[in-house]
Image (cartoon, rainbow, N blue to C red; front, side, top):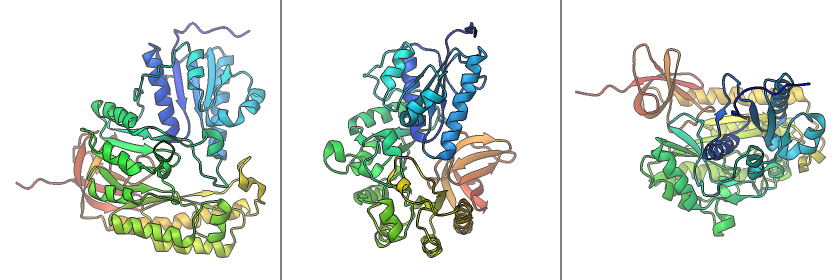
Length: 440
């Protein structure tokens, strides 16, 4: 019989998946700290005797990682190294009955909207008054700000509404309170996240209110950069472009997953747009904000994507010259509309198409980066890594975009602060630079 550990209760929160999960874990830990609980995030010594795993259920690789992590901690529980294991997040929301059957040694499973119940089993009370109180896990100078939960879009390939529910916007006044508290802690960059930024405000204000939110957040002292992630092309509020152009604190950056460009594929994907409308939208972005950096993601190998259709996508990517681009190979997601379609593209072909797009994008990125050589950019310095300080321009988001590498053996810049960096050379996905010399 397994013996209980003799450790004093310490709750180790393990986060898998996207930035939305990071935010949710931070809120959970903020609640636990307010209840005087001993809590750590992904403790490097792995010595928490109570483990909460915040899972991802988005695509196959993420699901596999989540399941492997659950099995890892269940095994530690069997060995007496962990007393209790709880699972929450998207995988648990979507597959709870299956997980309970296949991995019964987890103490309890919770969904994405079960925070009060999760806190209860951790002997903590859910404190409604904790607006904006969370234990941030990102570096001390930037933080995610989730402005809405859920999604009302009907995209055929996506299971997010099954896991996160319908779109619910957070009121502007609450977000301002939260952002103000972050600024007082030293946060300089806010990264706005949601399943769909474009839809923000429609449910509570009966209009798209992203521009009003940005204007309010830009007034907060201490916040110097505000970055937009995960917009949706259909119904994009064009007044946001005016705010980006006129407000120095709003980064000239937009993450807007476009997924495809062929009309038939877009129709099957239920994206509510077309080749022409999408191209015109990108043109509007660049006309209103001439130096905007656009990040997008694409799906290749969607059912019905012929060689001719894929070539249309390639030609479009070459013409658009996106500053940032990522590609996923399509895979069926249970209970989505596209799962009823025949997955008729062989996996080998899908992966070849991923490689073809990324090879094309690598060349585009290389050429765009060469244009930056000799220019000076305001950069936030994220960390020191070996012999380099690592920073980012306003055109780059953490973890997914270009980094600016500064030789630490010859230069010094302060982590968590801004510095003006002159770019001296560039590769496909990295910039190299040195602090701008101040003229005497």
